[in-house]
Amino acid sequence: MEVIVAENDAQYRDALKVRETVFIHEQKVPPELEIDEYEKEAVHFVVYDDGTPVGAGRLRNKNGFGKVERICVLPSHRHKKIGSLIMEAIERKAKALGYQTLLLNAQTHAIPFYEKLGYQITSEEFEEAGIPHVEMRKVLSDAR
Image (cartoon, rainbow, N blue to C red; front, side):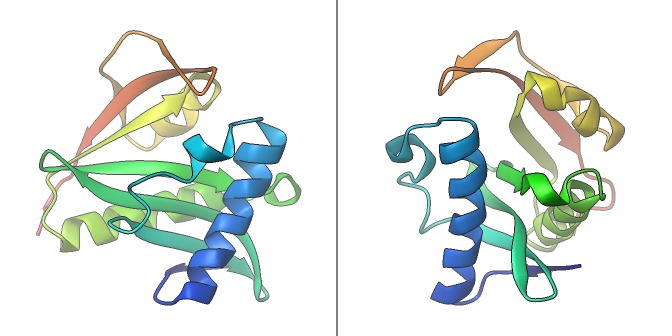
């Protein structure tokens, strides 16, 4: 498995392909909510398994915080620590960009996953795209 920062259109399209499978087809998120106005400003990540895209995520600036978004893994590759690989890559990039705190909106079923990575719940439950979420944050150690 290899996690890369998408540096060209083909790699970005690979990330979108995984997101489309997971969020639009599996979770029934409307395409206009999944592909949003932040696509161009975000740093996109894609995970390859022997050249096949199997995971994705993105990082963007939100009011000086690193906002982690669109973390997803294809059903065929879940429970193989790919989500953790994506998060490690995002945290490395966030530190390199100078972020001290990361925040994300976690689907409630994923709370234990993010808690294991050091994220803490910072909001009440809310709905996003018809799915229950909570905001979570993590202060990065040795930022920069």
